[in-house]
Image (cartoon, rainbow, N blue to C red):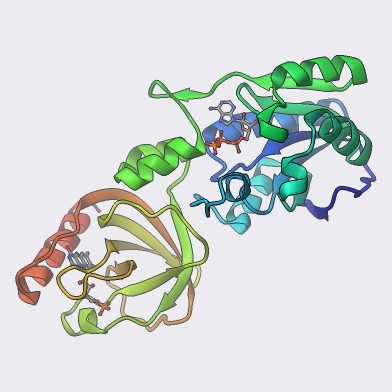
Length: 304
Ligand SMILES: Cc1cc2nc3c(=O)[nH]c(=O)nc-3n(C[C@H](O)[C@H](O)[C@H](O)COP(=O)(O)O)c2cc1C
Ligand SMILES: Nc1ncnc2c1ncn2[C@@H]1O[C@H](COP(=O)(O)OP(=O)(O)OP(=O)(O)O)[C@@H](O)[C@H]1O
């Protein structure tokens, strides 16, 4: 897979089929679309490509920092696995946001990126004030003779799958459904940082995790989970919250890896959430907190 960072004047060398979007999380609906893109591109002897904005479009459109399901690194690994040949990554800025959708298609996509086909979901909107839509693409595909493939809505459990829906499920703690719609277990990548070391003293050391990016924060509470560190996967009991019993401030993501006693400060780590077990609680004393942590760990062990 090749990755090109492009600006408005970039001139591509190869003719491509292309998909547009943020593809945050690369969920099951994205996969249906991307597999169609790869299949049609191959059948017509074009490369498959994606135009992706390095920063989420909602950062600029709504002037807020968008919470995410995946880092660019995670996203690109999925795209490579699916068989995408080229990623065109572009800064999403005011210029592109206010660009007329016809100019965006005819000048940028068709002339500069040499697009011969577009694969798009049923609801996709783009360009200034989202004036670019399927109807416009249909008209322009007839006028300029490029292929257009529109993907029907991908629905699961009666709901149209979207990154927004999955983020809201994670926020509600419905991690099982979120994982089903993602097609894999929601994973926070980060680095292990120092904690208070109280857990260690009480027999339940935890890896405190500083996330790499602005992930959607799951509902506060305890999760059955796995942790990948140094290439190995361990089962873990993870607490996400503010530790109200001890400090009640900031956000803490801490995983107690089962039957693991190594020093891992500073290491990169992948935390995958499997099931929400209970809400985070404030206990009257530290002994009560740690007997509950023991019960959480025993519950996870009983599932193994
Ligand atoms: C499985 C698990 C469940 C936890 N549940 C709670 C909780 O309900 N309330 C709370 O205040 N802290 C909870 N914690 C966080 C502990 O307070 C924290 O691990 C302890 O203070 C040690 O912190 P340290 O790693 O900074 O030493 C939990 C931690 C784990 C591993
Ligand atoms: N459920 C779905 N069925 C068919 N196509 C979809 C579905 N969800 C997304 N797509 C398509 O995938 C492409 C990428 O879209 P985008 O990154 O906006 O995903 P999204 O899940 O809809 O995100 P968001 O929730 O932020 O709008 C678009 O062409 C979009 O129409």
